[in-house]
Length: 300
Image (cartoon, rainbow, N blue to C red; front, side):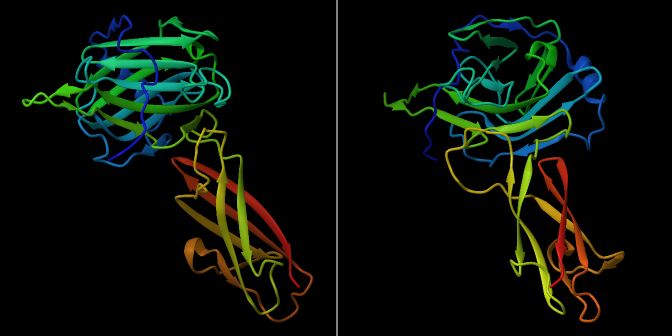
């Protein structure tokens, strides 16, 4: 796979602190929030070359304590300094602040073998930062990082990028092989909010058929066409679509039976409905987050 990749921060050459035996602490942090209440993000398998291959990222946060657990899974992860894994965190969900050469990153973790590093951006350089709440453990198929948001600028919502890199090596014939790398996601960043235990869905673009609204005796279709998330530095204009959606539709006080995708297609009755109010509750789901969008139309 051909991809543009830049080392997110100088983690490999920075002193790394010993992680230590902390698996029990991380497991305790994971049960703070039910497993269903988490941000769940996926990345394609087999796109990393010789580097670690990231396939999923899960984020669990506990609002009362502020503790966050990042779980990064895949294969050949963080096996050593030559094959590290990074977690870059934009703590204000704004790629125009922080390190502008790295998607607006404010904090980063670097994990390699049995050691890790943790630094913050001070406005001009990467410096050490308090880590009293940080716990890290790793294996070749899973890296887990636990940290309190008090050590991430008291973030309530954040962007994150997981990445791997494998340095160039020489083959037996003396040819220098190209490095492998993986970015998760491949473009932009994932978003996580304590309020939603997933990405913060600010709004939903909706298309209806007919576009003018429901008409007497006709089919009426509600279709979510894009989710509006916090800025994430994406370079493509492809709309973000919900993973699933559903509708509850009422005409006055009477609920209409829906059909099609998510039950979002209804047939408007023919008699005594002109001028009545048709209300829709559209529910969209994306990466562990759910947003309910109320919509109101007048039948013509």
